[in-house]
Image (cartoon, rainbow, N blue to C red; front, side):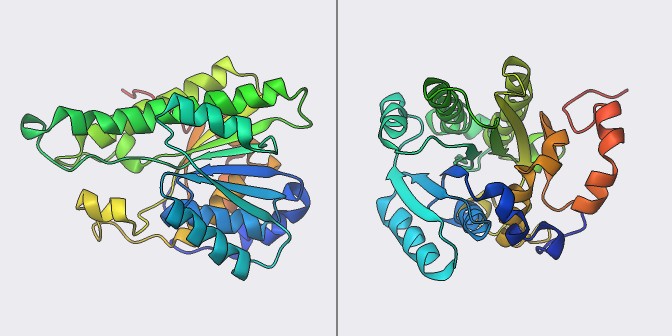
Length: 282
């Protein structure tokens, strides 16, 4: 599919999904700024019951909560918890203290090592991409699923959306091997746990948020290389991706820049040909 959108559009307006999401609790890692904050705003506009922001920096979390509470005119409760997702103790504490059992998990937190040629890379820094992007995401996801399991039979299956990147599989650029490789592993991980965990328990989707202008994008050296995606588009698409209409994307990888109407029109073909998964073609 061709990338079509760089800004949001009426088809995925989060207000359209209020009836479906009004009782849902959403937990967003890396929620204090950037794409995470945009996703939080979109879920608040969709009228989610609660949006829980998770991040390492309390000041950024507080600022985002204050901004959303003053600008979004819904009854959504917005809370935050300071958590290092690579710390098993922190993650365990997070899921012990939150009052509501989340229905939706957005794995947005990530790390990009300082760009460098592999021969010159500091491997301790290099490995942080893997410890955050894979281990941290796995810790949060497992704890999320176990919390739901402990709290009894769910009303509806959970949804886990993991933010990824086009760099995981189709762009080869220098000096970003730790980030690209960790994200490629993350994409495959999301596919495989969707085999382990039944659809009636949870469904999983990977999402490329587009080339949003973020601190990480600037750090990568790729800022301005690709057309810039409005973070609101990323947030609104993620909201759409957790709806029943997007259920056919379970275990698959989607771009926020794709047109949703066209994507839905290709639903039968995507399912029949098992598209939007990692594979080798000859």
